[in-house]
Each structure stands twice: as structure tokens, then as C-alpha cells.
Length: 182
View 1 (cartoon, rainbow, N blue to C red):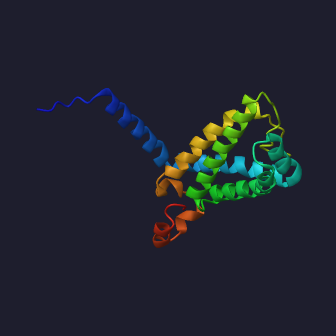
View 2: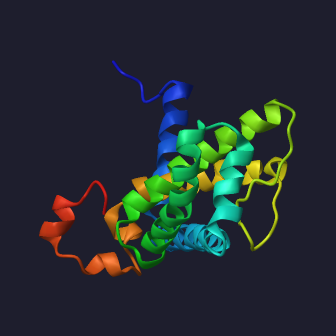
């Protein structure tokens, strides 16, 4: 005879899953997270595109993590990737791909800042380029929350991820084809 009592670990797992589903499935939160991340990454892209050599390429060189052969191409591509991800989140186009890009960039930024700070160096991270000067020791605290918000968008159901978005007008057939990135 089975009793209705479940082990504490199972109950905690169900509670955390229910909370995650409630947050990810809330269309208002999904739009709020999308717009918040879009604004952050559009401002970041704009701040670097004002003078891409100074605010993006030089910032990558200062970190001194990537090999020289990769540092310049990465510094040139970064603002455009941020711009595309920000626009995707703003308009709700390729939201899953855009949010995954934001999550991966935030993880990479966190690791790069952690390496620099572990070496005892303090530098202007170049996060927002010409808009505002930011230190790696300050902005490192933004990377993990940004990554978590982006992951919530990645795993949000279509109905909440595309609510109040251009993406909701895509036909069901195309949504099915593009489900991993849309």
C-alpha cells in the first residue's frame, strides 16, 4: 500500500519546476525580460558602434585573453552580434536564437571578467562603449542575472515568448520548422 507522502527532494524538485514554469510561461514577464535585455544590448551595441576600434576592438585587446589573430575579428563582430540579438528580442523575431546569443555572450563576458579580476587587473570592460565607462569589477555582477533572464526566454513557451511580438504572425508551419530558433 502506497502512502501519499513523497520524499522531501521530490517535493522540492516539483516546487522549483512549478515556479520555473510559472515564470517562463507568464507572457507579461517574458515581454518584460525581452525588452529589458533588448535595451541593454542595443545600448551596448550603439556605444561600441560609435567608434568600433576604440570601444570594441581595443577593449578586447585590453582583456588580453584571446589570441591576437582572433581579438580583432571578435572586437569587430561583437557590436553587430549585440545589435542583432537586441533587435531580435525587441521585435520578437528569432527570440530563442537571440536570447541564446545573449546568454552565451553573458557567460563569456562573465568568464573573461573573472579571469581578468583573478589576475589582479582592473580595467574598463567596454560593456557600454561611449555611453558610459564601466569597470569589470562592477559589471561582472550583471552577467549572471542577464544570462538567467535570457535562459528564461529561451525556454519560455511560444505563447509567452511571442506575445506582443512580430514573431506571433509567423504561420504555424514556419513556426514548426524554425522552433529551435524562433
